[in-house]
Length: 130
Image (cartoon, rainbow, N blue to C red; front, side, top):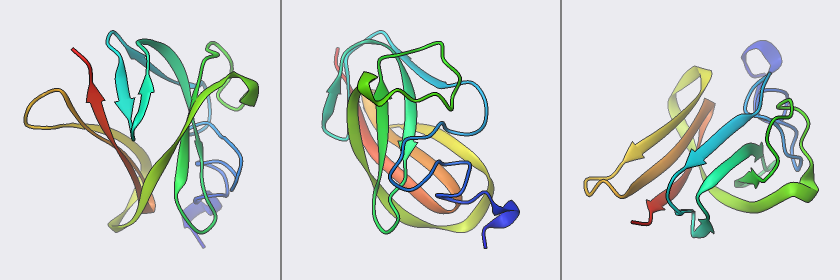
């Protein structure tokens, strides 16, 4: 059983097949001044709420939502701009806290979105338009 009973699909990262906030509390926001591409999906510059939809036996999806200002648990699916599939990989050693990281590539115009929780890592490439 995951530590604290809050593992993937059981709390912190939402329920399998449903969009949930990235933790407990206010929504997680993404604000960009440039158009970006996440996992092959173009996202125009602006501010979006981000949610995670974990898969029971496969990849998860990051939900890019046009609505902002709501509590992190109030996901309105009709406001989803995009559902972007994330690669799922085992993570070792395990991490105790949910972590979100953006890793810059050597050229400085993109990199990788990385989400880590316990023994699972989700990733997607990111590129930034000039």
